[in-house]
Length: 114
View 1 (cartoon, rainbow, N blue to C red):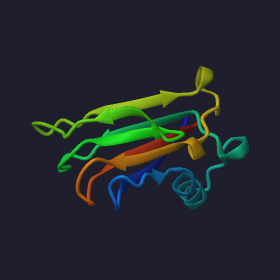
View 2: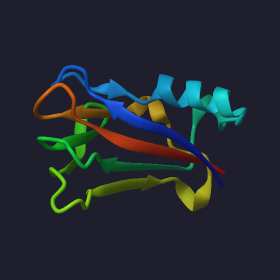
View 3: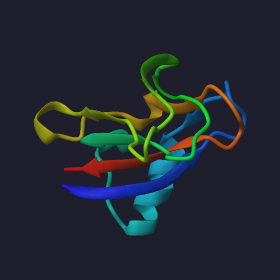
View 4: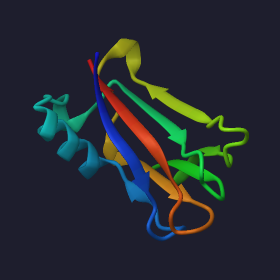
């Protein structure tokens, strides 16, 4: 699989989720990686940023799929979604990152293409 790191996805206004689709498309184009049909990917990994002051949420279609707590002792919480048998079946347009506090929190995101 090919990793496409999006880097830190910062949430400029907490309570307003940052959609992943445009970020994935731009990062894939910059790396000259071909996405699956409709921009689909095989896996999405999300880590809370060690310096966040509050929790970060991973949302799927507006619903909280996971809440990553404020990292403690330098250890960030991790969340992952994998497509069916390492196929490009996850649609990044359904995923977003949100934060519960301050306007500088965010998450490190990497997507994988089969």
